[in-house]
Image 1 (tube, helix red, strand yellow):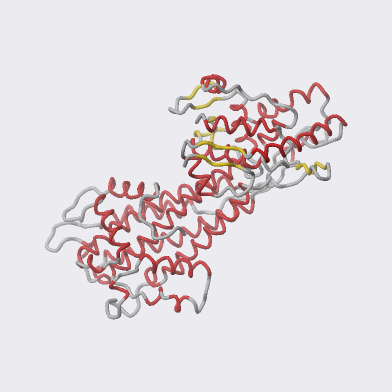
Image 2 (cartoon, rainbow, N blue to C red; image 1 turned 180 degrees about the horizontal axis):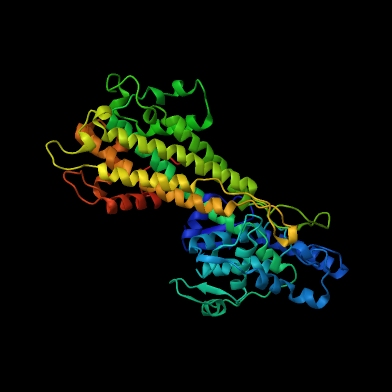
Length: 503
């Protein structure tokens, strides 16, 4: 990726993920910058008139009724960042911070915020120099990412810390000057514009959802390979079978599975071993379809968040109004992410069941634990414990985010949304899912070997099989498999596992 042009609209999750993880140039649409400058004139007007506007000519939170005098107004933007730059805990990843910066630059361009255009340009300059504010992970409850964004904003004005392209951390003013960037000067409204938005959780959610997309694609491939290794009945995958109850998720998952199995001998009559298979094989379209639907919903909600105004107040240039609102509240994003988290529970429990069926000769008609015949090996039995442990960790991470009446701002800010917690859980869940999928791929490829059906695979799964075998050879005798599982999981994470289509 060489460049991404931000306009305020149309920023997609995959484009954001590529830009956040890479070093390509971030470009700002010139007409959007011009619109920002026009809207800024409205802020100047209300300041000149002394009109009460939240966070512009008044205090914040429980002090929203207090008017700011001229001397306070001059320093209020800086004080807004200094007072709220309280992020704690482990350092947030470079990718998540870059994603937050890109989202913020994008939403500033919508022109409803009233910030100066120099802020978006400064953010883009730091992104293009590949220098990144240092921000703790903890501080947002999903009612704007005030604390996280203020910590990031403080670095952008030269009072926090930044990391350079090599990852070395230093005073942000020094890091910026070393890359020929002057620390940002703030005017009225600018400090609140840098702090009071959902850019941090929007960026992090986009990256987690994009990783979830890759995890789902790999799980589809692993399921198809398990169907082959088990010699399952593919009747439940037929379009006409699914169409009797055409739920969108199961229809999409079924169509994609059929693409992965094109050319398989298993599609021909007489090659399935059983009339009906266990549910973890028979109900793959329904189980995976649940995740497909949840993923679609999460993408839709996150992309609206990435391309929408999440500020308070909001400026309307056409009517010369500045209106207080609740655009910073992210409960809908929380629900979308939690739906995705729970859908992974259904998927991974079924994966665990499929692996167990392949290892059990009663169901598979293969050797116990898929060992080589006349071998003293214990096969994949020990790895099954790791698979169960992964599912246990995943189930714990997928528990609902607690929601309670907040006591912030002396009771003015009395609700929470919890979306950052849900997003961090999704990131963990995706990592666990990729490891479990790596195990299913290794086990199902072993079943293919023991059945001696590799020539019966279709072209797509033949390619997948070959790639897995480069990373993990057929198990002939006991050996540690953890590094092979990790290598396959990293291949999934880096989008290097073959896919017949983008879901």
